[in-house]
Length: 317
Length: 299
Image (tube, rainbow over all chains, first blue to last red; front, side):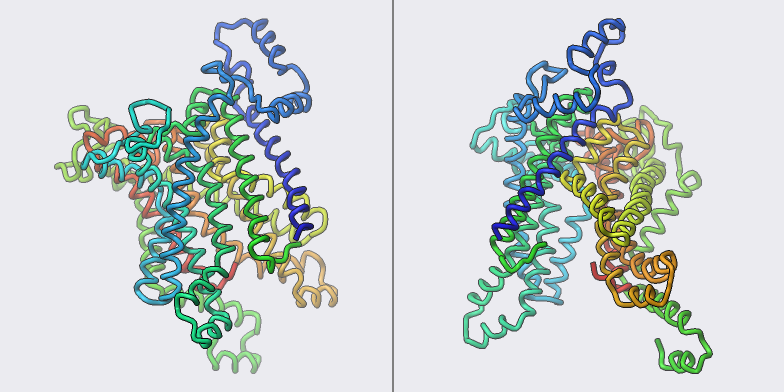
């Protein structure tokens, strides 16, 4: 197993390098020269050239990549073209705000999915199973940003119970663990949980069914164990797959929260990304995507290693 | 396959190959038709597709001609069955026209990704060795991004717009299709009948055409259909963010985004475009599931 973990760690290195290459090339995908795009129209050719040299854009592309990477690994993603503040200073609070959403959404969807998924597996073929299965497929087929808007209509516009947008008090971007902030968390977390809840429910149902089909479950029952004890055995055996899928969904929540953050004007990474796209703030765009993708690589790596550790039967090659 | 046709085949009346292939597709068709959910979903999708195609004939109003006096009229207003939007344009007409753009930017990338990913995956699986390594490791890099994030990053960096959204979506759909195509091809290649064909002197192209393609296309196709729903949701999501088509073009995602700002005045107008995305995506998902069990494909 140690061998596998070591190989898995080594394997993450080329992937991480590939990710940096993609993030770096993002600025060259643009319709125009990245420097010309940020310069005012009245700037002279000499000014453009001076900026180009100042930012190292006159060097060959591989050299630019190496310079960019060297700075990026030290946490220097350059300055925002809008606020002129270091990208990292904007990124860290945004990342914290997104993490709050993602952690709660992952926990909520996991809690719901494990319960209803196991219930569905235990009552396979009944109306209960069919109801759960249809809810799960709805969860993965529904545009979650639309559900978010519908939730706002019901709970903010019509009932006035919860805030329609923002993170607690007004436009403040400071977080506190009080009722005001927690209330603002409810609707975004519910909307974000839909997709992972659907996916984890399906996984739980399938893995519990798979475990239930084994002879040893029958043996446990034959030994006279209570159904609760049998259930514990079943869940324990189904857990590696379910936990792995939950881990991956957590990674997707971090990167996929942009639509929900846009609906709720939640000051997280998605919101930052959205702003940077429309203001053509390329350093912020590049830095945010790089950090989110690296986080995703890290989550995937952790999930793989955890899964091998939880279930050593899983043979890897 | 009925006992009669088997007997007929044995008697040499029907060529064996023809019997087998016709029997399979016919049984898929029969199973699919018996599945009420699949039939209903197919009917809904055909209806949506037809209403998008014939939008100019069906629309009661010009989808781009607004009436300032009749802004945000509620559902059921005389002359405007589904009300009007924030610029006083007829909602029904805009939803019909919106289907054209939304379906196209949802479906076309899947088609492109099927061609590219399918070819890459089959090539990787069939050739194996270093080619497989190169193709699959490249795909792994794309897998290192949460897919929605990658789509937003690419279309955002490209500057948004209709064709950039299609390109971004196709790019995020290629890696999963390649993976599935590679794994089924690798599996089929290891089967004895491929070995037997090679041993009896079949050329590479014959093996690919007859033995490999006929066995891998079904699973690849089924898997691809399961991505349509995701593609439609993400495509509309990109439009919702403002990365897709530009106003005043009618598109479900873009309509959702502009009507969202009017929820304090007429909350239910925003429900309609999202409902269209939802119904379309759900129908594709259920139909794909039905097709998978009818074709008896395990992935």
